[in-house]
Length: 300
Length: 325
Image (cartoon, rainbow over all chains, first blue to last red):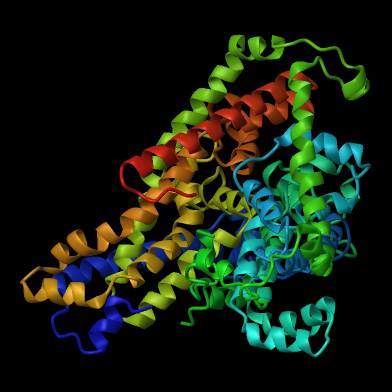
């Protein structure tokens, strides 16, 4: 992406640097933006480690630290269960989603040759512009017997039309000669798909996989709608219950006679635990944002 | 930055893999289907998935014309014609939800929609590529956090007992709580949307800026155009097609404002300020048991939304824009 900055460095003398005054204003604005974005997150992370006395007093930033909140949470109970549930949904969901999405994308990559593929493609694309609504979806899940099942959070969102288009675009850009050569050598379509197409498509599978994973990890409303059993709740519902709805976290106590950590640090710690996986995959995600894989597909 | 995108997917699918036999007798449809039989093993499962999970639920909307109860089912519930729709138009709660939805949607169009354009222009004008990267890394991040996390974090900072409240209390101003103030709630909602999505929204504008040929800036500079003039006359016009596209999508979803975002906060600020059409459907239908009325409201909303997006697209095309399809 040839930005102005690059053009300047590439020797475009007609782009003179702005005056010091303008640069100062820009620096202040940028600093404010960065602080607004980061400070809340940094604050929550810091407070989750705050010593009980400081957390109760309510400080702008803690100076004494303690691991009690995490110790109490990992002592067992709802939060650990929620993290496990979310991990299961995320891992299993992402794998299944990638498999289903890339299969359909490969099937629809050659709309000209395959009779009916165009119709299916239109049918899939149309789903980006409407949704049946909350209640009809709920009725379907109930009818399928998926209520109160973890699968209700995975199966209905197995294929996203948008991700399908992203992968399909990539498939269509693969060198045809390679695939044609394999076909002439007598390789079956499934073998071509598994041994040639998928290995060549690692970048796009990585980025769509990461987006699926983030989506599954962030699942909230469907869980609220479909799961009554608190044992099966993903971490987002747990977080909502204990942080926003203010329910006491059961089982979050310290071993022995130690007084339980203050509710505030417990809440902060739950927020942090729900956020950490996103922070971990974020650097990988970020590598792909601007690489056109996504923007190229927006107007598929 | 590698550009792997199929820059123009439309033409690419025309030049499809596989030999196109020159001047042969065209194979019959049945022969073509038989020849591509393997392709269907890839297509059919996915097509069935969309049929079952996107199209079949559409049929469920028939309960909008019933006095539906889950116990009796669709077959057993009595048909009531348009009674549910009549009930909606007379329901003050629907009116309240509609008003809240529209106010929030308009506020978002005014503040949240232009925000990424401004941010993209600002970042693009930065001299240091390293600073730009760093800021991008920071501003993209919140997009990937769930609404539950975002609201929880905001609660800890701006809520009662949060950081700002503590700070103000130290200065002798107790009782600050931005999260439960019904009067300013709609602005809070817009601020949250900007905080979460503004950075992510810049990506598409960066792509548009990158596609502007350099020689335009060069020519303008030689003709003596200042930095502001170049931004105003070259960069901004290049963003218009993308902005139009996004505006169409936004108008199409004007009746859908941050469902999870509002659902999460409604208990804190009350329905008066936070009830929107989607939360109305959820509370009245799933929790309240008035399935028919709730479905009717959802259906009406869906139909109006589709009409809006189609008309916005038509208008954009008439004005010389591109449209989405």
